[in-house]
Each structure stands twice: as structure tokens, then as C-alpha cells.
Image (cartoon, helix red, strand yellow):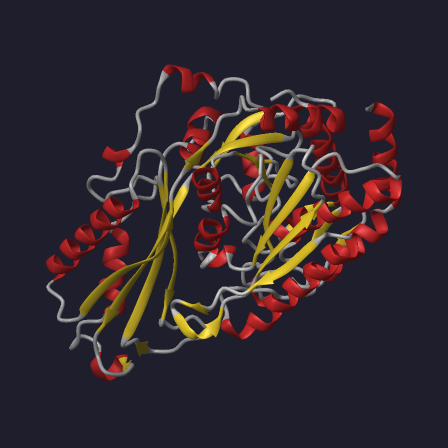
Length: 477
């Protein structure tokens, strides 16, 4: 094993310039799924990946059409890229999931560089660009790992099926239906799933992640006047939608993060002694959190309480207001309609339907008490359940051995505060274990300005993905 993997690692090191060029090309494609204007770019990114997989020699590469986008019936959903590498019935088959769409990004949002130009700080090794860590770097890591196997003349020890989607950042529309439709066709024979779309707990030690929070995303629409109004003419004489929305926002969550919607915390599974013990020996410090924040604005001062708030308790975040004036300068307008957006990160044993009812009932009650003549409408835009897997499964044991071979340490076993709804779908529909094997660090700034992936994490991450495939073939099941 050592000689084969040493040869593989050497090929990864030789190919670093080419691997970075591949990431640079991917980052340059603004595959923003939330903006219809960028839909051609999302499709272009699918074409880019399909070409890379074809060049690898995948026996099957398909860009599966998904039809129209439910909330925009004139807009085609981007395709899901399905591909298969190897069809040896004597080998295990690993399903690799990733996504090729990204969050919106504009230079004026506060980026120090063009978000769609991969910019490398040679002193720190940080590679800045939208999608660098979420999730283009990890997706390309699999391709680079297979290229290194080929250049090293080593047979890939497992079969691999790829499922790469272009709507992860916008609710994964169409993905669940495809998995259900294909579970006895394309996905037949899958032994386990591996996803690299999350991050280390800190900045120094790799981890394996066995749990995620879910997410329910809500939109509040407050409508009043027929058109925007001049505040000098109408101020004080009309119920203002933005004032109503501000009161509703203030009723949802306190500054210390406490959710104030009645009934939310009643759904949360109680903390057991055995679960609490899992938090004792993790490699994480409050300094790392402050570094990731770029400030000392954390709510809690202790590691255990901080991680529990991130992993096993729900949180509510306010995200923005659509329709209100937000450009530089001053504009004395009363907006006729505003839309407030917020989400709740969910945990076991919260049920999405019951949560939505609690949210709507609370907002309706608060709005009624305002006595406003405006109208208020609440919708849940999308929802995903929380997920927890077994870290004792052979899939995790193989990954742990791979981490040790690449990094020389045993990985932390962690949960995560973010959401990847497809983890639960794969587990339930295919009946197999799902592993989260992160490439990036917790300070990568996914979804934020100046998103980055450290060059070291990219290169060693490619090695880790290849070593994981090797160990999957060797591990006892």
C-alpha cells in the first residue's frame, strides 16, 4: 500500500500547477444558481465538468435534464451531471456527490479581488474566488485524484459514480426526484456515498463529519400602498410596510441568539450524557472562531457551548430585506412592498411541517397585534431535514485511515451547523452510509466575501480523496 500511495502522492505533487489551472478555469464561470441571468453560466459549468469526466475515460457521462424550475416556469433547471468510472463487479462502488453552482458575488459586496478570478496570495497560499471551497475545489479534487491514479499507472481500486448538481445553493430543485427515480437504475449497486462539501472544525486538523443541521428558509411579504411614496408627503399618514416588517423581525430572535417563536425548542431532542462526552476532546479553540469571524463578536465564551449551538441546537438568522432602499446615499422613499428573508437551522427531532406552522402562527399573531392595514403573507421557500449518520461504519473507518496516511493524525469526528439536504435523501433512498469528507478549513468564508481555499488544503485534499478510495477497497465490511 505504502509504495502505491507514495507514487500516487508524488503524481499529485507534480500536477499542482495543472490542478490550480483547472480550479482557475472553474472559478471563472459565474455559475450562480439563484440568478436567472446566470443560468447559461450554470449550464456552461455543467458542460465544463462533463468534458473533464469524459476526458478521464468515464464509461457513462450524461447531463440529465430536469425540466422547468418550479418557481420560474419559463426557466430550465440546470442539468445534473451523472457519470460512471469503472464497472468492475468485484469492486466496491462509491457514489460521489458535489455541486457546481455558487452563491452570488459582486466586487462591491466587499471582495478584495474579482470574485470570479482565482487570485492567489503567494505568501499565505490562500486562493481567493467564489466557489473555490464551496464546492468547485472539492469536486475538481476527485477529478485530479483520478488523473493522478492514471499518471501513476495505478488501477483505481473502486468503481465511482458521480452525481453533480447545479442547484444546491437554491434548494436542490429536482435532485430528490432524480434520486428516487434512479435508485434502481443509475444508483443501483452503490455501496456508500462520499460528499466533500463542508469544512474542518478548525484550521489545523482534518475531521470527518457525521451530522448536519437542516434548514427552513422563509419569506415575509408586507404589502401596503399601490406604489412607493414620498415620505415628506405621506410620512405619518400611512401604515408603512418596512415598519411592520421591522417589528416582525424583532419578534423572531433576541441579540443573544435565543429564538422567541413559541414551541420551537420543545421539538429539540434532549442532550444525553453520552452525546455531551463527544464534545470533550475536539481540536478547536475560541481563538480559531475569532479568527474565522474576524472579530470578537461571539455569543458564548466556551468551546462546548459554542459547538452545541452550532451543531445540536437550532438557530434563526435574518438575511435581508427586498424592496427597501439600499443603494449609497439618501432616498426619502416609503417602500410600497417589502420582503423579509430569514432561515431556521433545524436539528433532531424537529419536523419541517410543524416548524412552518409554528412560524406562520407566530408571525400572524404578531402582525395582528400591530393593528396595521397592510397585508402580511408568509411562505417557506425551501426546507431540508437534519441528518446524523453512524461514524462507526466501514466508510468512516476507511476515511479515518486515509486521513492518518495523508496528515499523520486521527481525524476529529464532528457534526456541522450547515445543511446539505441530499445527505438524508441518499441515506433513505439508497439505504447506504453517507460520509462527509471535508477539504477546506473553517475560515474559508464560504457564502461570504473573499471566499478562499488554501493551496495546501487543495493539494493535500486531492491526496486524501485518492487515499480514501484506496482504503475503501481494503477496509473490512
